[in-house]
Structure formats: structure tokens, C-alpha cells
Length: 110
Image 1 (cartoon, rainbow, N blue to C red):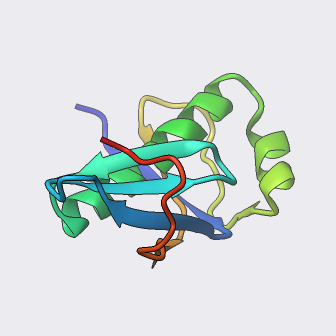
Image 2: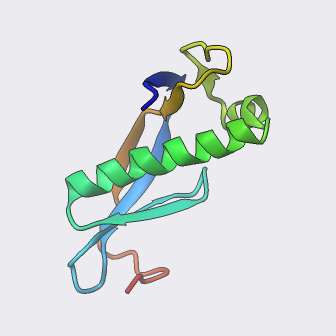
């Protein structure tokens, strides 16, 4: 199995976090990237956030839209991408979460 190159991205994403209606799952929404993820716990939610950001960046990288995507979001590549090889790339983007106020009832998630 090929090894992995970790590509660090300088930039941040803000995720609004809240429990679903019956409080059995956590939901996180990032409007800037257009993603919504969920997890059974807050630690699983953090893993889902990191994985979803990685998948988005892998997709734009494979479509040759990587630089434009970074520019659009005000991010920059902190780790150089090695020449194409058999090694897998994994992208890491810093993120932080903020709780949605409990009185915010817009777009209830079930």
C-alpha cells in the first residue's frame, strides 16, 4: 500500500455545531465550503469534518482546480505537493467549531 503525504493548508474553516432534534447525533455546517457533516459524538464529528475537508481538496486537486479553490477561500498551501507518484495525498485544514445558539430554530435537522 502506498504511503501518504500530508499536505498542510494555511487557513481556517468555521463550523457551526448543534445536536439533531432528538439529540442522538451532532451536526456541523460550514457555509464557506458548503459542507454539512454529522457524528454520534463530538470527537466523531471532528473526524468527519477533517475527512470531508480532505475529500473536497482531493477532488479539486484531481480536477486541476486546487490553486483556484485555495485562492477563493483565502487559504494557502503550507506543504509542497510532491511530483505525482504512487503516494496518496492527505490534506489537513485547520478548523474550529462554534455552537449554534439554542434559540436559533432555522433549518431544523431531523
